[in-house]
Image (cartoon, rainbow, N blue to C red; front, top):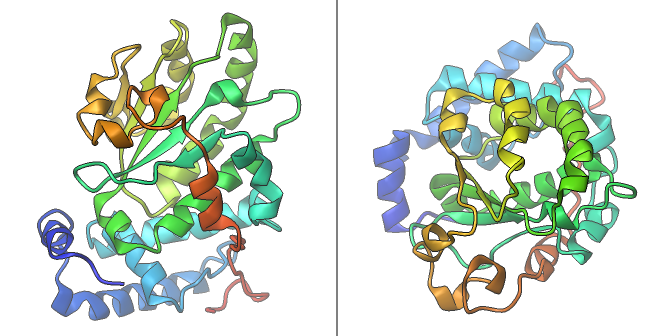
Length: 283
């Protein structure tokens, strides 16, 4: 799958990508990974034989070899450290998240090519839902979407719709934030090879910004700058996409959001990263 001419120009301009040197860059990263794994027995090799997979890390770090290697190693260490997320991870294990429309990706791109990932915390069941399964569902979705190089270049905006969250949920949200903030930010900020261009919030109760103070110490300065709270003002979103394609909850004239599209992408996917028995070897 190749980039469109527009995205190729963006990759050259924003990511320092040179199509003529792409293969050489991938091979250089692979050799650096092989050398690094010799002295990192706690870091399993994950999909190191796949050019397309390594290219994700190069694009995420603007073809800076040292930074791409660091992100790859962090990703592999995260996989090894958190079997509660990755062992046996597949669509069947997390299908209930999509059946309740808790999370998903908007089917249509924004006008600038970015994909919009939607979270609905108000649909989370604190008594029965498992945060590790929620993280697994997000990982599966992003991993699938990153098969498309357009998404590697144009990136993602995370949008949380807090409708349905009340003050009675505050204590549970505080506990969840304290327990899981480091895990969430380690995966999606430090390890996962994607461009996250915004962490947006709408319909948030007054106390939600206070929750972000718990998470803030784990965030980079760039990530902090990309957090925005819109309240009931949805104009920033409606300007980004044809209003007829935007779900009703987000101020559009489209149908109520459903995770069916996301589920259709994942129904036949197994997302457990392939790790060789010899964790110091290269697949």
